Length: 277
Image 1: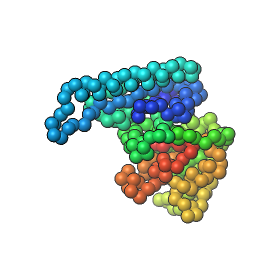
Image 2: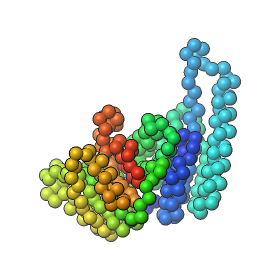
Image 3: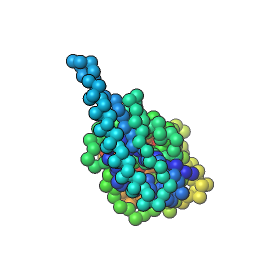
Image 4: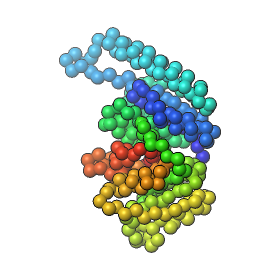
C-alpha cells in the first residue's frame, strides 16, 4: 500500500516529468505527496586563508534562501492545481550533502520518485540516484526526463533469485496490482538449486498469481547484449509502462567501472524503472 510519496528537488530545478508521475501516483493511490527542496549549505574553504570572510558566507546563504523560496512558491502553486494532498518545504543544513538530506526525508515515505533532469550533468545525477537508493531504505521510481509514451498496462520484472530483486518485486506490488499484464523476464536463466530451480520463473509467478496478478514468464535470450540491455530491449518491445529490477546487485564501485544492470538502465531507460536495494 502506498500512502506517502516523496519527491526530492536536488539541483535547484524541478523535473517536470517526474513530478507529473508523482502526482499521478498520489491520485491513483489516494496518497500524500511530500516535496522537499534539498539544499546543502556546505561551503568550500579557501586554502590560502583557511576561511572566507563572514560576509561571503552570509551572501551565499541569503542567495540560497531567495532562490529556494522562489522555487518553493512555484512548486506549491503547481501542486495546488494538481488535485492531490501535498506538503512542500525546504530542508537545508551545513552538516550533510544534498543527497544525504534527501535520503533522510525518504525514510518517512513509502516510495521515492526520482525525476531526471535533461540538462544536469549525468555524473552528478548518478551520484544523487545512488545515494538515495543505497541510503534511504526505500524503493526508488526513476522517471526519465523525456519518458516514452506507452499505451499498454504492462509491467516487466527483471527477475533473478537475489535479495535485491526480491526486495524490488515486493516493493513494486502496489504498482503491479494496477497492471493488466505482468511479465517476469529471465535473461538466459541457469537451471539448478543455486540458480533458478528446475522450472525457472515458476515459483515467483505462482507467488504473484496468489496476489491476483496475471503473470507471464518469459525467457529472454541474451544474444550479444548485456543483461540490462536485454531487459530494456524486451521492455521496449512490449511497450512496458514500468520496469522493475533490483538495484546494485554488485558493489557500486564495480558497477561504475565495469557496468551493470543498474548503470545500464540508469543511463538508457526511457520508461519509469523501479529500483530497490
